[in-house]
Length: 283
Ligand code: G3H
Ligand code: ZN
Image 1: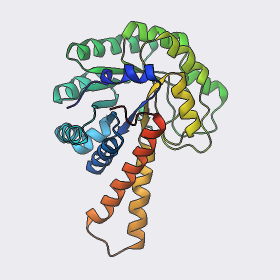
Image 2: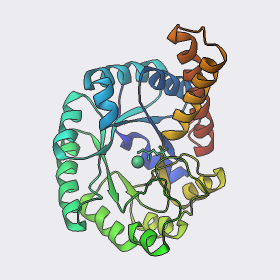
Image 3: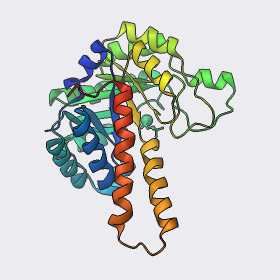
Image 4: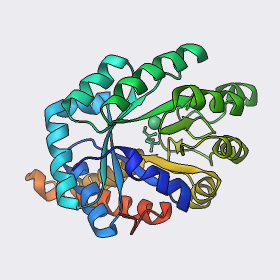
């Protein structure tokens, strides 16, 4: 069955591993991710963005996640990714989500705290875990000026107070990663992770986990990251496989013939991440 992230995140932080959030985009993602978890005996988080929810439909998302949890036999959290309002978070909870992210990072600091607290209060009352976010996690733009880059990063003192006042179960802070693939290597601010992780109980969440070198991932986990989000890398693996098949076999028309291998590519990607994050065998 679906569980809140509090079922496994405190242990992850204590034992020094991270649990992956793998985004659910369709049936093939759902099955590929669940198959990886079953094989690796790893807990995991299904991340569902508002866009993915519109694409699949809320009822389908919950039903597929429940079956995937049962089928994989590991603890699974069904988590709203980058939730934009109190209302959408409540809608997801009512539909059966076990976890939600409220992303108030575009609001002024005090407003972000106030709105996040409201979500935490309502969610915790029904046993649902919450992730909050501070600082802006950029796009793929590589040649940003240092000044601008610094402005978007989370300030450790603000992150610590944010956690103290909201008591979120997972704390996403901007530390230099970005959504999507990187052109160069991301410069992760391990010092910020360090400073914040020491002062708060909740693990830190690393967004934009795709394309981050393995060594940087490992280092971030040592410093206190306990949840890592990966989406683009699974998408790239799936799409490359499908494109290769469609290019080489123009006569192929049965979607199962190319989506099946696409699903296998997602599974392999997720297995690699679970081993890297140290969550394998922790279910
Ligand atoms: O919230 C989703 C993640 O941060 C995904 O980032 O697509 O760069 O892996 P990614
Ligand atoms: Zn994200």
